[in-house]
Amino acid sequence: MIELIEKSLLTAMGAVALSQQKTEELLQELKQRFQVTESEGKEFINRLDQLAKENQKKLEEMAQKELLKSADRLGLVSQTDFDKLSRKVARLEKKLKESGV
Image (tube, rainbow, N blue to C red; front, top):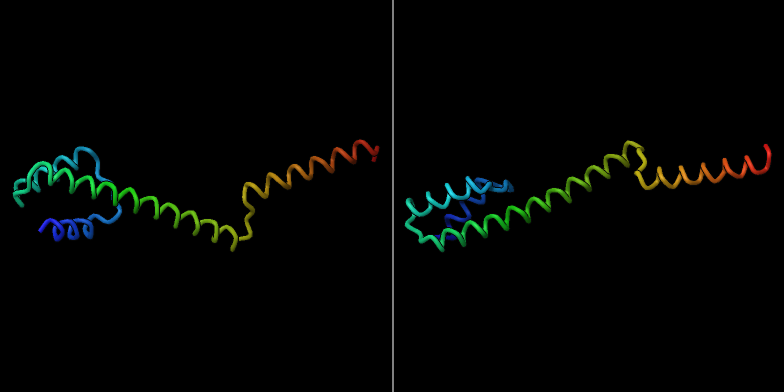
């Protein structure tokens, strides 16, 4: 029964992390509606919280990859590439000054 509730709630909430207040409200609702013990409810909430954190991390990684792909398609340079080019320009300017040109 707990697994069915867990799957239903995970589907409903997706990757949204629960705040402490919402977690307590959910725990109280689980206790009242489904007659689960406090420890079962806390264990369930902890699993949901862990899954939400994992999903959030995966979403962040996917978003980062998509941003990099979009920047590449638009021909934008990365900060690393920009920094390399800036250092190279600075070296070339220095050489020009030293050569008296």
